[in-house]
Length: 145
Ligand code: RB5
Image 1 (cartoon, rainbow, N blue to C red):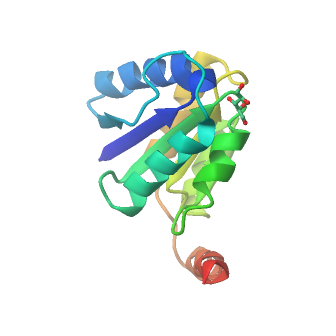
Image 2 (image 1 turned 180 degrees about the horizontal axis):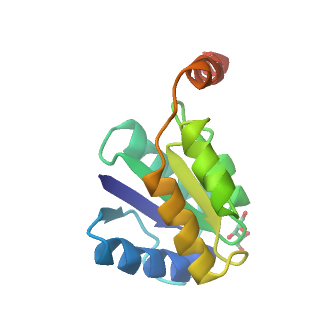
């Protein structure tokens, strides 16, 4: 599985920490920036990771800003994206099983680093359950038309 990752300055530190973790567990990761803690605008990075997922450059992605709110809103503006902002492992797992979330958003100034890794692990290891959830996710896509 190839994972894209992107953040603004508020998520930069957590992005680097998650990259090390993904490297350690052998998950290939493409970094879409930002590449320093200099101030940038989160919509630019939300757009980059979301477009990478839609273009199938990566299978799924992780998007981080200070709260996770701005970047998740930005990602969800891109057609085909289901970005879930998660602060706990249960929501992360359910966002895959029930919502087929293709981007996980995190708040770099909200979640502790080790909790963030547990959230990432729960999200990476969970699969979409399909069935009745497929019908609901299809209805989400229909809203985009
Ligand atoms: C940047 O200061 C901050 O607004 C951003 O990282 C994010 O929290 C926005 O939702």
